[in-house]
Length: 331
Image (tube, rainbow, N blue to C red; front, side, top):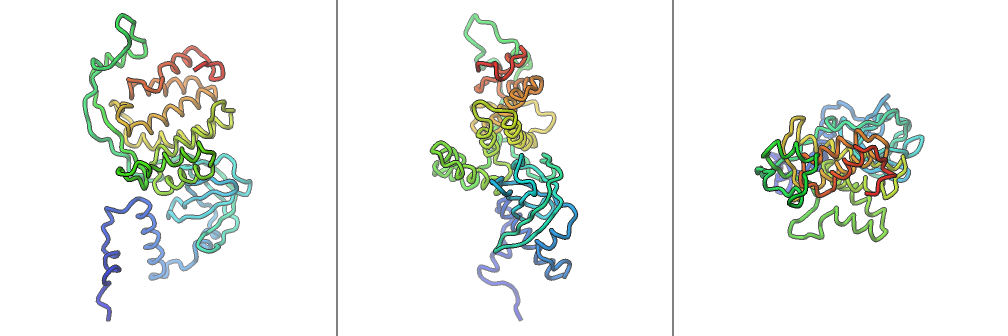
């Protein structure tokens, strides 16, 4: 009679789950759930059979391809390739699709599903993500900030920020799957940008999507997906699609801040930059879509979060407050 697992099997059985990545935890959960179904006889059907039997399926998108979408089921986290009946349209990474299943089948180790998209929504709380950490608290003091040359008036947008006095300053945790601090070339975002700038567009998207498959909280992946859709002269579709990417990144970052955050996220603390870039992109999208009020609100928030304003939010705020359209702006 076997008394237990031995060697490597025993190590895997008693693995330290605290050291597992979110993706590894999810894969482990899938394997455990599958094994429990086998042992208890709760549901011996294949994944494809279970999908076909459902009236509605909710899928979380992590990679939008030309004709198909890589997803995970919201309830169990099982991966599949989804082929929308109407083709790929405006679906975006990090969003939840409500789908009426059509045909489901398996080929090799991949499960496929066709069906009709009934709804798409951004619902970050439903993903049950662990909020990014706010680390290394310091004190930000407006008296130590540069507000312009001596003798020049301080811009009105900065006056309430200065009057609010010192506030706590933080650095937001940054997630970079596979990054080795000892090897700068291992930065996946840098790799994606290099691919994009050398014309290897498909590879650049694949790297970003692999980051999101590993962890939805890779904010710079959302940022660059938005950047590349937005471009230099965005039309309405480009601005709206880019808005979806930036909004996903902002919503994930906001989990760390909570509704009553009054602190500072300075640009000089490098790991704050992905969230600040998402905010900036979201503001530009609202501006390009003609919602100057929403855009101005974001640019104002950026100034409170990063009073040093390395991104030029103050100039965007001046333009939107004056009613200048994005197309008319010379910024």
